[in-house]
Amino acid sequence: MRHTFIFLLSCLLIISIFPTSTSASYGWGYNKSTNNQPPKAGKYGDILEENGSYYIDQSGDKEIYLTFDNGYEEGYTEQVLDVLKEKDVPATFFVTGHYVTSNKQLMKRMVKEGHIVGNHTYHHPDLTTISKQEMKQELDSLEDAVAEVTDQNSMKYVRPPKGTFSEQSLQWANELGYIHMFWSLTFVDWNTNSQQGWQRAYKKVVDQLHPGAVILLHTVSKDNAEALEHLIDDIRQRGYTFKSLDHLVMKDMVPTSLYGM
Image (tube, rainbow, N blue to C red; front, side):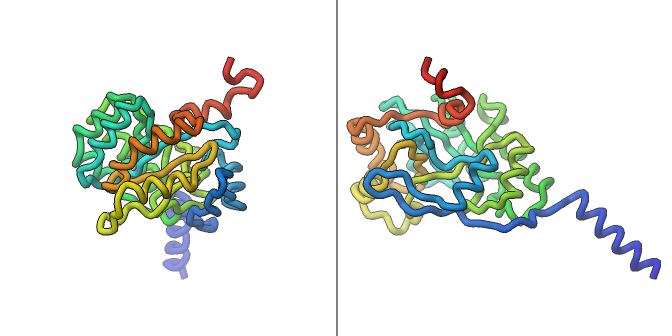
Protein backbone atom coordinates (compact mmCIF):
# COMPACT_ATOMS: atom_id res chain seq x y z
CA MET A 1 0.00 0.00 0.00
CA ARG A 2 2.82 2.34 0.93
CA HIS A 3 4.59 1.65 -2.38
CA THR A 4 1.37 2.38 -4.29
CA PHE A 5 0.98 5.70 -2.48
CA ILE A 6 4.56 6.70 -3.27
CA PHE A 7 4.08 5.77 -6.95
CA LEU A 8 0.90 7.86 -7.24
CA LEU A 9 2.54 10.80 -5.49
CA SER A 10 5.48 10.62 -7.91
CA CYS A 11 3.10 10.65 -10.89
CA LEU A 12 1.34 13.75 -9.54
CA LEU A 13 4.65 15.53 -9.06
CA ILE A 14 5.73 14.72 -12.63
CA ILE A 15 2.44 16.02 -14.01
CA SER A 16 2.70 19.24 -11.98
CA ILE A 17 6.26 19.89 -13.15
CA PHE A 18 5.81 18.81 -16.77
CA PRO A 19 2.14 19.39 -17.60
CA THR A 20 1.00 18.35 -21.05
CA SER A 21 -1.65 20.07 -23.13
CA THR A 22 -5.05 18.54 -22.38
CA SER A 23 -7.30 20.95 -24.29
CA ALA A 24 -8.80 19.96 -27.62
CA SER A 25 -6.37 19.85 -30.53
CA TYR A 26 -7.26 21.44 -33.88
CA GLY A 27 -5.76 21.53 -37.33
CA TRP A 28 -5.83 25.07 -38.71
CA GLY A 29 -8.37 25.51 -41.48
CA TYR A 30 -10.85 27.95 -43.03
CA ASN A 31 -13.19 28.39 -45.96
CA LYS A 32 -11.04 29.69 -48.80
CA SER A 33 -11.42 33.25 -50.02
CA THR A 34 -13.52 33.93 -53.10
CA ASN A 35 -14.24 37.20 -54.90
CA ASN A 36 -11.48 38.92 -52.93
CA GLN A 37 -13.37 38.46 -49.67
CA PRO A 38 -11.56 37.39 -46.47
CA PRO A 39 -11.94 33.67 -45.70
CA LYS A 40 -14.16 32.51 -42.85
CA ALA A 41 -12.45 30.65 -40.02
CA GLY A 42 -15.45 30.17 -37.71
CA LYS A 43 -14.64 29.04 -34.18
CA TYR A 44 -10.96 28.62 -35.08
CA GLY A 45 -10.71 32.33 -35.78
CA ASP A 46 -12.45 33.10 -32.49
CA ILE A 47 -10.00 30.91 -30.57
CA LEU A 48 -7.04 32.65 -32.17
CA GLU A 49 -8.42 36.10 -31.45
CA GLU A 50 -9.14 35.21 -27.82
CA ASN A 51 -5.53 34.09 -27.42
CA GLY A 52 -3.73 36.95 -29.15
CA SER A 53 -2.96 34.93 -32.28
CA TYR A 54 -3.28 35.91 -35.95
CA TYR A 55 -4.14 34.50 -39.33
CA ILE A 56 -5.22 37.68 -41.12
CA ASP A 57 -5.22 41.47 -40.87
CA GLN A 58 -8.84 42.18 -39.92
CA SER A 59 -8.66 45.91 -40.68
CA GLY A 60 -9.77 45.58 -44.29
CA ASP A 61 -6.72 47.51 -45.48
CA LYS A 62 -5.28 46.36 -48.79
CA GLU A 63 -2.09 45.14 -47.18
CA ILE A 64 -0.41 41.79 -47.76
CA TYR A 65 1.93 39.82 -45.49
CA LEU A 66 4.26 37.40 -47.24
CA THR A 67 5.53 34.42 -45.24
CA PHE A 68 7.51 31.30 -46.13
CA ASP A 69 7.98 28.01 -44.28
CA ASN A 70 11.50 26.55 -44.53
CA GLY A 71 12.02 23.04 -43.24
CA TYR A 72 14.66 22.03 -45.76
CA GLU A 73 16.29 23.46 -48.86
CA GLU A 74 15.72 22.54 -52.51
CA GLY A 75 17.82 25.30 -54.04
CA TYR A 76 15.13 27.96 -54.60
CA THR A 77 15.41 30.20 -51.53
CA GLU A 78 18.25 32.21 -53.07
CA GLN A 79 16.03 32.99 -56.05
CA VAL A 80 13.20 33.98 -53.69
CA LEU A 81 15.54 36.32 -51.82
CA ASP A 82 16.77 37.83 -55.08
CA VAL A 83 13.21 38.70 -56.10
CA LEU A 84 12.31 40.11 -52.68
CA LYS A 85 15.41 42.30 -52.77
CA GLU A 86 14.77 43.51 -56.30
CA LYS A 87 11.11 44.28 -55.55
CA ASP A 88 11.80 45.69 -52.06
CA VAL A 89 9.30 43.37 -50.35
CA PRO A 90 9.57 42.31 -46.68
CA ALA A 91 8.90 38.70 -45.72
CA THR A 92 9.01 36.35 -42.76
CA PHE A 93 10.74 32.98 -42.98
CA PHE A 94 9.62 30.36 -40.46
CA VAL A 95 12.53 27.95 -40.05
CA THR A 96 13.37 24.70 -38.26
CA GLY A 97 16.60 23.68 -36.57
CA HIS A 98 17.60 21.50 -39.50
CA TYR A 99 17.21 24.42 -41.88
CA VAL A 100 19.26 26.78 -39.72
CA THR A 101 22.20 24.42 -39.27
CA SER A 102 22.20 23.34 -42.92
CA ASN A 103 21.82 26.75 -44.56
CA LYS A 104 23.77 29.27 -42.53
CA GLN A 105 24.56 31.58 -45.43
CA LEU A 106 20.92 31.82 -46.45
CA MET A 107 19.99 32.54 -42.84
CA LYS A 108 22.54 35.34 -42.69
CA ARG A 109 21.19 36.80 -45.91
CA MET A 110 17.56 36.74 -44.72
CA VAL A 111 18.39 38.82 -41.68
CA LYS A 112 20.91 41.08 -43.41
CA GLU A 113 18.31 42.00 -46.04
CA GLY A 114 15.74 42.98 -43.44
CA HIS A 115 13.47 39.96 -43.29
CA ILE A 116 12.06 38.48 -40.09
CA VAL A 117 13.00 34.95 -39.08
CA GLY A 118 10.14 33.18 -37.32
CA ASN A 119 10.14 30.10 -35.11
CA HIS A 120 8.88 26.86 -36.66
CA THR A 121 10.36 24.90 -33.70
CA TYR A 122 13.66 23.05 -33.69
CA HIS A 123 12.46 19.48 -34.32
CA HIS A 124 9.01 20.18 -35.85
CA PRO A 125 6.85 18.42 -33.20
CA ASP A 126 3.10 18.63 -32.68
CA LEU A 127 2.94 21.36 -30.03
CA THR A 128 -0.37 20.06 -28.68
CA THR A 129 1.17 16.76 -27.54
CA ILE A 130 4.15 18.02 -25.56
CA SER A 131 4.60 19.71 -22.18
CA LYS A 132 5.13 23.41 -21.67
CA GLN A 133 8.74 22.72 -20.72
CA GLU A 134 9.25 20.75 -23.94
CA MET A 135 7.66 23.56 -25.94
CA LYS A 136 10.01 26.04 -24.30
CA GLN A 137 12.98 23.87 -25.19
CA GLU A 138 11.87 23.64 -28.83
CA LEU A 139 11.42 27.40 -29.13
CA ASP A 140 14.52 28.36 -27.17
CA SER A 141 16.74 25.94 -29.10
CA LEU A 142 15.63 27.38 -32.43
CA GLU A 143 15.99 30.95 -31.22
CA ASP A 144 19.52 30.21 -29.99
CA ALA A 145 20.45 28.51 -33.26
CA VAL A 146 19.33 31.54 -35.28
CA ALA A 147 21.19 33.92 -32.95
CA GLU A 148 24.38 31.91 -33.43
CA VAL A 149 24.46 32.43 -37.20
CA THR A 150 22.67 35.78 -37.70
CA ASP A 151 22.30 39.19 -36.07
CA GLN A 152 18.71 38.42 -35.02
CA ASN A 153 18.92 37.77 -31.29
CA SER A 154 15.26 37.27 -30.44
CA MET A 155 12.01 35.97 -31.89
CA LYS A 156 8.37 36.82 -31.40
CA TYR A 157 6.41 34.80 -33.99
CA VAL A 158 5.81 31.06 -33.97
CA ARG A 159 4.13 28.98 -36.65
CA PRO A 160 3.10 25.59 -35.26
CA PRO A 161 4.15 22.54 -37.27
CA LYS A 162 1.35 21.37 -39.57
CA GLY A 163 -0.85 24.17 -38.22
CA THR A 164 -1.85 22.08 -35.20
CA PHE A 165 -2.89 24.02 -32.12
CA SER A 166 -4.97 24.02 -28.96
CA GLU A 167 -6.08 26.78 -26.63
CA GLN A 168 -3.44 25.52 -24.21
CA SER A 169 -0.61 25.63 -26.77
CA LEU A 170 -1.60 29.17 -27.77
CA GLN A 171 -1.61 30.26 -24.13
CA TRP A 172 1.72 28.60 -23.38
CA ALA A 173 3.32 30.30 -26.38
CA ASN A 174 2.04 33.66 -25.12
CA GLU A 175 3.51 32.98 -21.69
CA LEU A 176 6.83 32.18 -23.38
CA GLY A 177 6.78 35.51 -25.22
CA TYR A 178 5.49 34.30 -28.59
CA ILE A 179 2.62 35.17 -30.90
CA HIS A 180 1.13 32.40 -33.04
CA MET A 181 1.00 33.40 -36.70
CA PHE A 182 -1.19 31.25 -38.96
CA TRP A 183 -2.29 32.17 -42.51
CA SER A 184 -5.33 33.06 -44.61
CA LEU A 185 -4.01 32.10 -48.05
CA THR A 186 -2.11 29.01 -49.11
CA PHE A 187 -2.31 25.96 -51.36
CA VAL A 188 -0.64 22.58 -51.72
CA ASP A 189 2.78 23.71 -52.91
CA TRP A 190 5.23 21.58 -50.91
CA ASN A 191 5.12 18.45 -53.06
CA THR A 192 8.36 18.75 -55.01
CA ASN A 193 7.33 15.85 -57.26
CA SER A 194 4.21 17.65 -58.41
CA GLN A 195 5.39 20.99 -59.77
CA GLN A 196 3.21 22.19 -62.65
CA GLY A 197 4.72 25.49 -63.74
CA TRP A 198 4.75 28.99 -62.25
CA GLN A 199 1.41 29.91 -63.83
CA ARG A 200 -0.38 27.42 -61.55
CA ALA A 201 1.21 28.86 -58.41
CA TYR A 202 0.40 32.37 -59.62
CA LYS A 203 -3.25 31.49 -60.22
CA LYS A 204 -3.63 29.70 -56.87
CA VAL A 205 -2.57 32.85 -55.05
CA VAL A 206 -4.40 35.40 -57.18
CA ASP A 207 -7.67 33.45 -57.02
CA GLN A 208 -7.62 33.63 -53.20
CA LEU A 209 -6.25 37.17 -52.84
CA HIS A 210 -7.99 39.39 -50.29
CA PRO A 211 -7.26 42.43 -48.12
CA GLY A 212 -5.12 41.60 -45.11
CA ALA A 213 -3.95 38.26 -46.46
CA VAL A 214 -1.20 36.43 -44.61
CA ILE A 215 0.21 34.33 -47.44
CA LEU A 216 1.99 31.05 -46.70
CA LEU A 217 4.32 29.67 -49.36
CA HIS A 218 7.05 27.03 -49.23
CA THR A 219 10.47 27.76 -50.69
CA VAL A 220 10.96 24.14 -51.76
CA SER A 221 8.64 24.89 -54.68
CA LYS A 222 10.25 25.77 -57.99
CA ASP A 223 6.86 27.04 -59.16
CA ASN A 224 6.67 29.50 -56.27
CA ALA A 225 10.16 30.84 -56.89
CA GLU A 226 9.40 31.46 -60.55
CA ALA A 227 5.93 32.91 -59.90
CA LEU A 228 7.02 35.33 -57.17
CA GLU A 229 8.07 38.27 -59.34
CA HIS A 230 4.84 38.04 -61.34
CA LEU A 231 2.76 37.84 -58.17
CA ILE A 232 4.40 40.86 -56.56
CA ASP A 233 3.94 43.02 -59.66
CA ASP A 234 0.32 41.96 -60.19
CA ILE A 235 -0.66 42.29 -56.53
CA ARG A 236 0.75 45.83 -56.46
CA GLN A 237 -1.10 46.69 -59.67
CA ARG A 238 -4.30 45.67 -57.87
CA GLY A 239 -3.68 48.35 -55.26
CA TYR A 240 -2.12 46.26 -52.50
CA THR A 241 1.05 46.99 -50.55
CA PHE A 242 3.38 44.49 -48.88
CA LYS A 243 4.00 44.87 -45.15
CA SER A 244 5.89 43.00 -42.43
CA LEU A 245 4.30 41.03 -39.60
CA ASP A 246 5.58 43.67 -37.18
CA HIS A 247 3.38 46.17 -39.00
CA LEU A 248 0.36 43.89 -38.56
CA VAL A 249 0.87 43.45 -34.82
CA MET A 250 1.63 47.14 -34.29
CA LYS A 251 -1.69 48.07 -35.88
CA ASP A 252 -3.48 46.22 -33.10
CA MET A 253 -1.44 48.01 -30.44
CA VAL A 254 -2.09 51.56 -31.69
CA PRO A 255 -5.57 53.16 -31.39
CA THR A 256 -7.27 53.50 -34.77
CA SER A 257 -7.52 57.28 -34.34
CA LEU A 258 -3.73 57.52 -34.00
CA TYR A 259 -2.70 54.91 -36.58
CA GLY A 260 -1.05 56.43 -39.61
CA MET A 261 -0.32 59.81 -37.98
